[in-house]
Image (cartoon, rainbow, N blue to C red):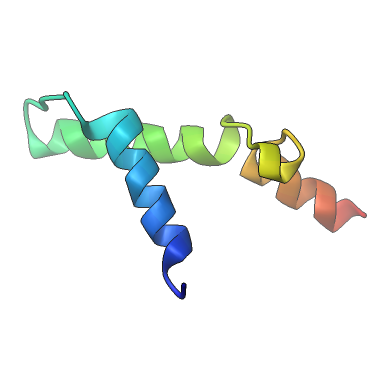
Length: 64
């Protein structure tokens, strides 16, 4: 349970970004990974976070 959050993230990463994709170079992979992490934190909504992205939820809960 101590690393469950990261295991969940890497599982989502593999399913949503990696499987079935072929990258031309390591640089292309790193660029796509950066885009995915930005999407994951700033745009992806989560039902567990009251239908907000992680950044929106953090900002909302700090303002309260």
